[in-house]
Image (cartoon, helix red, strand yellow):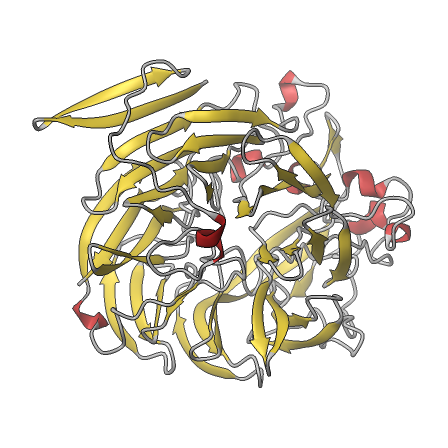
Length: 565
């Protein structure tokens, strides 16, 4: 069941209309301003239409009204409380006076001027939704898409909801896959659960689907029609029989090999290629998939898909056999170096990988983490050098740096064409990591691994992609992750630390120009836009400060906060 709460003002009186189905909709008098292909293609300025700002995934805005000289005059314009049981991981979108934010299987439309709720769309998960590791992701969302007059939202149970951006009325709700179920209520509890945001491109919504860490079902990407959700094509992350790389999955291991995409990818409109990182191979213990001796192509990989045909053009394996739960899920960012397009992807591994976007050819890998011991680097073929010995099942664990939380994780990177720098929200932490028996309950294979974290510190840093050198860093003693990064033409970088310090820094030097204590952790990335001649910056904050699940160690609920001068 879906419920919509719409706020309508009548002479100072607010009416809350709780609507079931499609009856009783209130209509707005103002004409809609659809999001066209032209708007989708533009770099972000007046609006913020993609999770990562543009198709290239750069999280860079051409706005400069807020700049390194005046950003110290920022003030809080408003705060909107969303409540919630878990992390605020969704980077909001902005268009036509409204901000869109997903949390706990709900979508909020917020008036960007006043910070008041305009409508709330709520989806109730099925009663039997649950299962292995599922509480860890329940209620988390990492983006929505906006195309035409509709918001495209994936609820945790793999339903795509097309919601009118002004009214909150659903155009369609499409169920794609079986969802994970509570063990005690199902013989087969395995299923797909979605947290990722879709990406709108001309004529298509790209929908990543992941079943990795709640049973290992293999991941893929759908392209669906924006009018009705009809599937146009499916691209598998793990190669099927007869495809290059299929031989790297012994026996039937690909059937539960994971490799789901769980962070929004990037798109090149000239090459017509969608680039996505993928999750770890599954189970974490590599015993059933070759004991780490097979590459397990498609897992812990970067995958390129031709969006006209749905054909996978290439797969590059970042961590062959992935014995460390080193998902390479981060958005591959399209930049230009010496006039040529390059794909750059910071990874859990502690390295930034550089790839040819057309062929997937490995160009180089540059270390950015302070401590790395799992490998000594990458060779000219793009393979790890001298990986440390894997732990033995049931024996003592081994110390591994970085930990499976990664030197970077889901929190988005930014690239500024103005400074030529890449901005990373990173962490330096290790782990004691061991293997145990892989249990199977209700057709759900468990991790077969365990870890104990060796906590270090968070750091926001700037890298020069030409030289691979660190330019500046903002290091915090508190463990955890800073939220995502945003860079602007005003020579400012915005981000929020794990302790809730919202910062505006000089993009070139790292000098902190403005700080506001939001009092709670951030995992989403900030956005910026223009409204009524003023530049705003909006940050979503709140939730679990580190590695946690629904309702666990929740900090202060969740908020969306707007700043301006």
